Image (cartoon, rainbow, N blue to C red):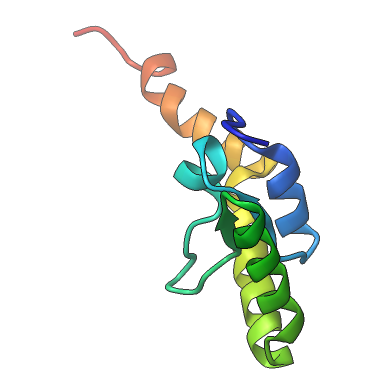
Length: 102
């Protein structure tokens, strides 16, 4: 989807081990389909040809390379998990909740 505000479906693909081909805009471009530990996590596309090229690349890449990219995508997806949200939220509000006036 063009200008998808976040891209939860893209994150779900990645979490399931699929290599995403997402639109080169908004959430997928800015936050989701980014390298993880130096490994590409998917592809961004804008034109029909970009999508076709990305799909062909995934289908023809050597299995070890495809599996490595899928594993990196899974690791990247963990950044958007409920557990990660909960941990980060608690860490952000802990100083406010336990702040004592002097």
